[in-house]
Amino acid sequence: MLTTYTELGFLVIVELENLTADEFISFFRENNLGFEEQLQINGAIKFKGVQIDSIETFQHIISAIGTKFLDYIDGTSPRTKMLNNIYSSTEYNKSKKIAMHNELSYSAKWPGKLFFSCLQPADTGGETFLADSREMLRRMNSDIVAEIEERGITYIRNLPSENGMGVSWQKAFETSDRKQLEKYCSSYGIDIEWKNDDSVRLKQNSKGIITHRTSKERVWFNQIDQFHPCQLGEELYKALISIYDVPEEFPTYVRFGDGQPISEVIVKEIIKTSDEITIAPVWQRNELLIVDNELVSHGRNSYTGNRSVIVAMSE
Image (cartoon, rainbow, N blue to C red; front, side):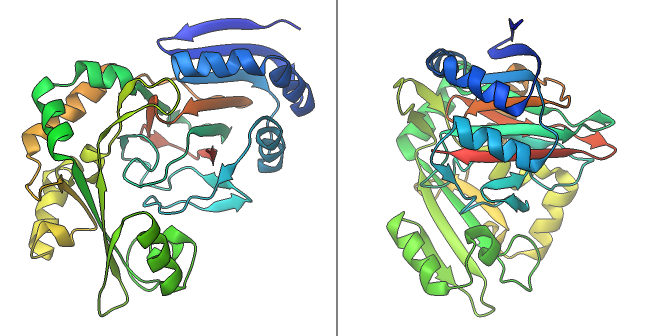
């Protein structure tokens, strides 16, 4: 078997010779310890030349090489559950980019690993952006880092009921039982406020900068720029201001943990720093991308044509 290892920045690329799903599973298991070590060092590995022609094949592979898969509970992104623990990637306007983020970094519970595969590459664009969260912290303005570490972050989400606009709380938490949602929020320290129209406001405190679960490295781990409305552009930001009385009523909002606003200057500095370190590996068919969700953030480029990327999450 011919195997070639190359690197694109921090991303390790393993080129294989068109392995079937079962051949890849055997290869991965034989080299599992090495891949785990590599993932902790680099943060992301892409395997090229793995026959993945369907959701079922993807399910077969990840079930054989991974454990403790998670449902997309507490999510804010619109996506479809395809099979068991497999979801579509975020279903968002293809003419827009998706900001860099570590999956569910605003939540009290997030996945340790992400598994991606592309069943249908876009005509143009559509890359899954990747950025090293350690490098993000190293390059970030030290005053911003100090503020976040001292004050913390509060994420605010206003989720409609099933008949409202946007991702409903029923879909986000995969339940229509209010008591079950309240129990979940209570167990994870999420402040919950019901409104008269059966919509809900959630407030979640977060550190914003964390220590990696095994390597103990400090990493940038937040979604300040994605939750702050200024990243939507001036026109949409002004529209939100005209619709809602206060920012806490926006669909998503973020502020410092002490209740003070996070300035647009800070958000723009975060976006600028992220853009400087982001890579954009092109998707092809028959590829499997594994990402350490604490070490590496991801996003999505705008695209044309049809695009189908699927994802699974594990502890």
